[in-house]
Image 1: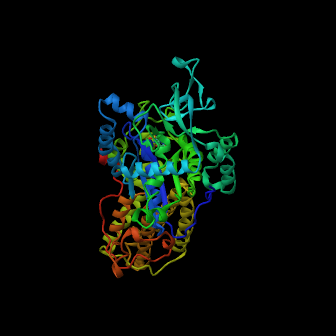
Image 2: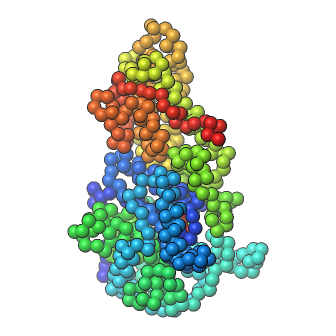
Image 3: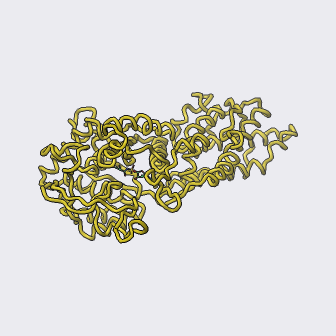
Length: 543
Ligand code: MSP
């Protein structure tokens, strides 16, 4: 009855990252794609470091919100979710180019069975009891609210208390439910977070959670008696598990919680749990940093290592949402700019952890300045010059001087700074480090003027040195940007002739390691450099 609080520390465990599972009451918008993209970039970064990785995303299919959407659509909830998952939620993963290892749906038997097993366990440990619930419930949040969570309404809701996220009054519930004894975990959660201050990030999120816990935790309903669309409570089939206490479990059920340890699922659990990072929007922090670890403590499972709460994409100063008709579909942007530019923009332009707004003007401006004129132009100039002056055969650098050594040293610090920032989920700083290196290389090209060197055969050694230096810099850039912009960096890798194996290339881009990226001189002399399509076509060419 005293389950372990701290996480296992298996050194060769996979780096396991999750996104929230998204409600399928409606189609995805760029707010959902933002979290998935961040998770994808981070997991690709860890893969590029040579780590084993497990990246999970999925959908949250139960609850009142989904049931009502299905009712309004005139279909059963199962038909509703099947249709939306197939037509919207799975395709959006391709749209943003996510390389997730699994996709969990809470209507899958593997989830329902293991979720029931989990609650049986918690009940056996004595943390579940039956009692009446009375209080406000926000269907938008699918959350039992406290008075302190609500704010005074204005306009049509003048004089009423409303949910600050959904801008509407809550529904008043009166039900006979099963309760989870959350109050039993107040002290243990405080101790856990005092000992592990990085377990909730950013710091503002940590402080918010600590003050909520220090205020004292009260027991909370873990079942709903007036809802039918959900997983039956195993010991009372007339009730379903409260949707959040079903949904949170996906992180463990999807990797094999509750299965035979010697089965493939059981081995996956041993190799992934506890999760390294739960990525969440700041609106669902309390569920992840208070209720979820308390549930795990109650069941006797190790706690996740980190919950990172990112900010909101705003429209007109408010959280973008479909229900407020402010949702932009990811394809609206990606059809125009491509998935790589989408991934670049959102992680570069908004500090992760803070709110941000999307604007077509800002995105177009950054696309043009940083991608088309910055990296795209550098790659186009480099490959065109090797083709023109060296028949497409990468020449050797035999005359390195101060300028080349300066770039080589800059690459060492760039790689170190980018790595430190990316593993700390400071995407914007990590990307900026690489962008600054690109600017330095572009500055080097302008200063060295290889097109002038090419006019006099006496400068041949310098010309070749300069061209090698640019291409070798692009080699490192392709590796450092591969987690962020995999499609374009693959093209760049091909243009550099790096794909081949042995003496003629470096092998697959995915096999390159961050740790060795700054070692100079890897791109083999003699590589076949080609001038391919422009990496980031000018916008007027695409419209
Ligand atoms: N189903 C729950 C999560 C259960 S996790 C066990 C849920 N779903 S949601 O679809 O409403 O939102 C999930 C996540 O989508 C948010 O936490 C956030 O990561 C992302 N976003 C949804 N709207 C967003 C913005 N406007 N801006 C940024 N992220 C947003 O909550």
